[in-house]
Image (cartoon, rainbow over all chains, first blue to last red; front, top):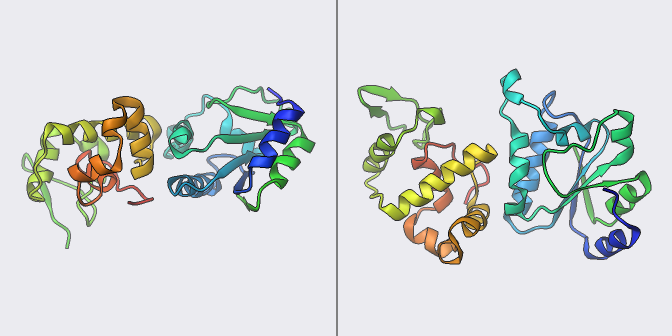
Length: 132
Length: 112
C-alpha cells in the first residue's frame, strides 16, 4: 500500500533517528545480516531506527525464501521479531520492486511501499544514515 | 578455562563459557546437568523462561537480549512476569545470558 501524503508528513515530523538502507540481496554477502545486527542493537537500547530497502535489498523482504538450502542461517526469520525491538518504520522503494517484477508479497507486515520521491523524503528526515 | 560437558557418556561440544555449539543437542536433562555444573538451581519459574527463550529462538532465529525478552514475555505472560526486575531475580547474572545457556542456545551477541 502507498501511504497518503498526509501520513508521510506526519511521520516526517516525528523522525530523527537512524536510517539503515539495505541495498543488497540477502544471502550472497554479509551486508543484510550486518544491517540487521545494527538495527537490533539500536532497538535494544531504545534508539529509534528505521529500515529502508532499495535496489536488490528489496529481495530481503520477499516471502518464501529458504536460506537453509544454501546452508546459511536464515536471518530473515528475525525480521518477524522487529516488534520486540520497537522497529516499526520499514520502507521499501516501489520502483525497485517494479524493476525486478516483484509483487508486494512480503514476509512481514506493516511494510510501507513508497514511490521514489516519498522514499527520498522519508530518508531525508533522518539525522544519520547507514548504507549496507 | 573450558569446562567439558559430559552427558550420558558423550562429550557435548560447548564454547568457552559453556554454551552449546549445536542447539539441536539440547534436552531438558542436559539443561539440568549444565545447571548442576554451575551450582545453579532451576525452579518452575526458571523453566518457564528457559522454554520461552528457546521457543523465541526457534521462531525468530535469534537469542533475545533482555529488552526484547521482556517485551515478548509481556505479550505471553502479562505484566507481572515481564519486568527485568522479575527476570534478574531468577537469573542474577543476566536473564538473557543465563536463560539462553540452559536453553541450549548461543549466547546473545547483543548482550546484557
